[in-house]
Length: 178
Image (cartoon, rainbow, N blue to C red; front, side, top):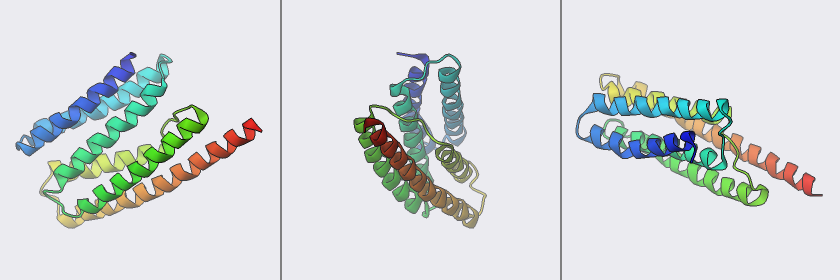
């Protein structure tokens, strides 16, 4: 197993650590775990690209780790900001749709495709808004609600972008077979 894949698996194991720390009121420690998760996300991708260690497994593990930590942040943020329910619902819907589409594309093409820039932007936005909601309770709820709305719009646009991307891959794959 490659180093980047081990780092991604480590990120998955950080999810319950984050949630446990946060729910026990150890907010700063939980934020440290989020920082470690974010840094390791950047590190695993950099190592994989730099040392040509990109794998199909890594392309699957990395977004799984991202989505699990995002869901954990949203679940923890529900205590502070009820509007996060809508974002969590959209997150789950988007991930189910993308999961089904990704599996179909994998079945047809035999490949797992890397994240696109708009997926990374959406992830960064969710991280920023959820960290703000979790770490800074003095921020007014209306501002957090605005951030949640921006994240929701980005999630919807991201889903649309991936749907179009997967459609293009399938059309190109069909043309290659003809």
